[in-house]
Image (cartoon, rainbow over all chains, first blue to last red; front, side):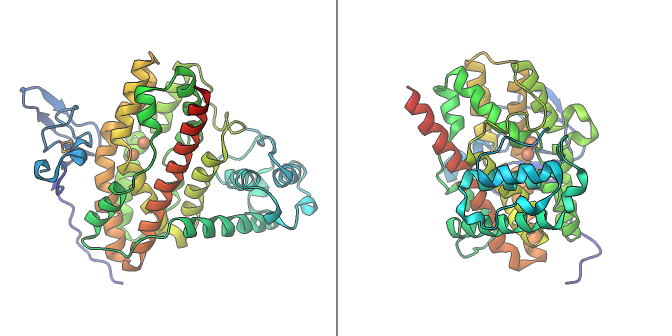
Length: 70
Length: 315
Ligand code: FES
Ligand SMILES: [Fe+2]
Ligand SMILES: [Fe+2]
């Protein structure tokens, strides 16, 4: 196997049916206008709107019916 | 930590060997021993490669007779795991199929019981059993790093860095658990409760060491990681709510709340970027990833059933 020289390493990743992954240090403003600073190398921003830990994903998207998943 | 209390002929002979280094005492036939005795012996042998024991010579980690015993116990355990958790044919796309495999596994849950019904005493019992893994959280997976190609290696380190507190010891996940234990009045020294844990906990812990310590089993190690992370956020929320209901300390609740948020990230990384990159570099590992995931889910299910049965017998 030959490994590539350049790898994809995007700053933002949209996970099918789940959150948006954000690499690096950012401030995310939630729907109420409150700013939240990221605290880890990669953060998961909720896209389904149902997380109890806004603006971050808390895994709730997994228990939503398919049509409510982002 | 000192050598665990023996739980049968094999662990007793092993303890004697670890004390004085004379290997003649080891029994020739380990199949004659019971599962608890075997799993405790294997756990003890593995521990020589983590933190060791205060009353054991460090030199014995690589003692050939002890490695032979470890290998015998591992072969039998791996065969049992492969028989119990045979994976389905790998499906496409890989990440969706792995998520579906994990979500489709309907295992028993101790977190749901803690959320609504457990007494404080039952919850403390669970926390004591969880120390065996949480005090070395992420460590078994760290063995896998040098066995990987560039893509999955970088991806695994992106996750592990967060488990290890991004370089800040105060945020190291196993240390968050130490803080929780101290605040709860439980013992936080590594291995403090090893003499109390049921065989199901030993088997869970040994599976992680088995997968982590063998390069051959790197796919299973990463599949185990993926299943662990993907079944953590929602149960961690239930645990946090149960601890709150019982009035347990904020530090212990904080450990679980950190895992609600961290593992919502980690599950995506583990399934998509880590296992995804592994399988794209090494397609033959797809089945191994699924095997490791099922072993993780199956062993937790077995532990949960055991606890729920014990607890329902109490009421
Ligand atoms: S996207 Fe995960 S909880 Fe909303
Ligand atoms: Fe963790
Ligand atoms: Fe994690």
